[in-house]
Length: 188
Image (cartoon, rainbow, N blue to C red; front, side, top):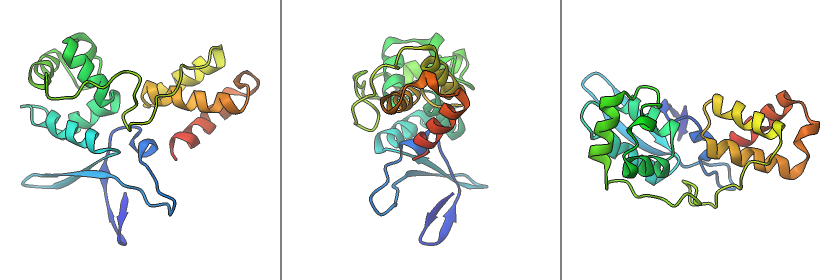
């Protein structure tokens, strides 16, 4: 739910969007919304950046790719990762995204080629420097794995693990507590 001037709107967003939305000093957040109009419904889809919203609009312009699948795709990979998969023609990797079959993956590669800007791997979707590699050690790897299984993108999981590992040694803390702390960090 998004509160706009005292009115609440239900907004569907890719997994992890809430953690990527930038909040100003007064606590206000900016969500970039796409309004999808059908005969029987008005649906709002929210994104953390203009780049992500524009990519969503490009994705749903493909025949037989609706907004729910567009959200699923952007919840599984970043815009940069999607652009790289499309540029390299990696149909098999696209089919690992829930809801994307072989024909849809082939259509995505064919119709998105050249329409999405390929972002260097070192940059994050919001233009901030990407987090460093996940700290070595089994606890860090387990935490990153747990976060990705909860639906966060690998880059988001790595950023959370890197942030937590800077403040304390992860091996001394129970995994459940680390997951809770990482989720709190990602929800900011």
